[in-house]
Length: 246
Image (cartoon, rainbow, N blue to C red):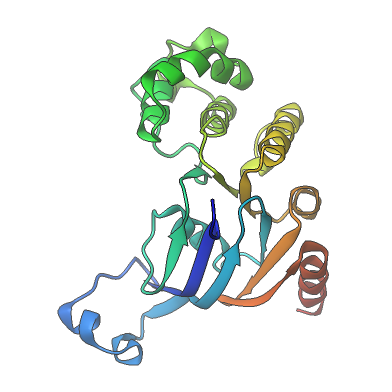
C-alpha cells in the first residue's frame, strides 16, 4: 500500500433530529447554509486527517460527539454530506457487530453467508470454518438457528468471523465492552496478532486502558469537530481534563 490507508478531507454529515434527512433538488444544488433546516444538526463538520498503513488510531470523545458516525463513514455504510473519505483496500468492520446475521439461518449458514459477503472465497471459508467456530466456543450449536443463540454467543460468533477477514483495515466500535472477561482476553490477543501482522486499526472506545493498549495516536472529537490529533496519551490527557471541568 503506497498511499494512506484512510484519508478524510473536509468531512461533514448532518442528521434530522428524528430521522436521517432526504435531499430534494433544492438541497442538492443549494449552498450549505441554504440547505440547513431548523430540525437538522451536523454530527460531524470539517473533519480532516490521514491514517498511514499499520497505524493504530483511537477515537475519543463523549457520547453523541460523532465517533460512531465517523466509523460508519470510513466503513462506507454512511455517505457524507460534505467532503470525502478515501479508503485504500477493504475494511473488516466490527461495528454493530451482530448486524447482518440472519435469525432463521443456522450458525453454519450464517458463517458462510457473512464471510462470503465480505469477499472470502468459499474454499477459504471451509478451511477456516472450524477455527471460527472454535474461537467462538459454540461447536455444539453449528446447526442451531442463529436466533436461538444467547446474546453472548452471537457476539462471540460475529467477532470470530469478522476478525478472520483478510482486509487490511480493522474498524472496532466498543465491541470489547461486551462478553465475559475470558472472551475479552481472547479478543485482545486476536487484535494484538492482527496489529503484529501490520493491519491498520481504527478504534472507538470509552475504555482508557484499551485505548492505551492498542493505539499510538488519538483523534479527539467534540461537538462534531476534530479538536485534537496527537499521540494517544496527549489526547487522553486533554479529554480527561475537559471531562473533569465539564
